Image 1 (tube, helix red, strand yellow):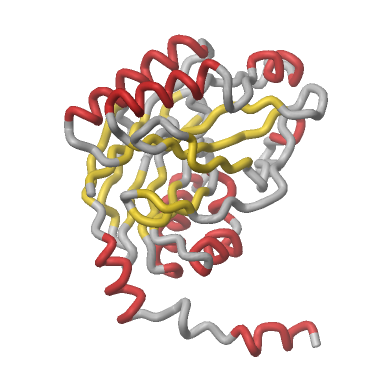
Image 2 (cartoon, rainbow, N blue to C red):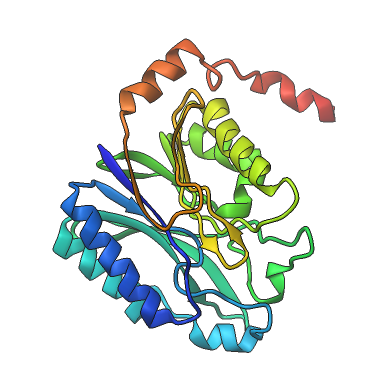
Length: 268
């Protein structure tokens, strides 16, 4: 199965970004892509000067114009799409950072609200966002069973392991990884580690430009980097073979070899 990974620099203009996204979906479809994955914050770039109220006013519901337009493009191009948006919440002046999976018929088959907010290294996402309260179950697609994470979630191995145990064969992680000291090294190392320790593919589309480092990645279940988009905007293409997941998990049975009967003795 062929995957399209989009790396681009989102502007502060929601409508301009939406037109870019629709164009990328059309281009991916022309390459016979099964699934097209977009980065975190694809809806628009939020400057630090933007107030929580201003962000909340620009956010939408899952049935709003932004996601609905993308779903229509997915249906018209008969392609699956994974992306993210700022979702309105019930908490005043706070939004969810939400990802979604749309199938080739334009139906939203899964959503996930980011549970680990980036309150680290000088940033406080919780000043403008509210965290989700649950991990979305892996969703079955023609690409395989997909587990959803978002950016900072990568730093918490419990989450990817939980998704793998629940059946995920591919982890898709829309991201906007902030530049900084050793940050690209962290990004590459963590993506490779999550693939290796769970014997799964990792697809991590990232924002580039503004304050973000780019380097969108696809890593195979044995830790080989199949795609590194460096700093360029555009679409990268990779073929995914689920047999690789089965073979890796058979020859390196990390999930099977876990000693869950012993781990709890640490608290005894």
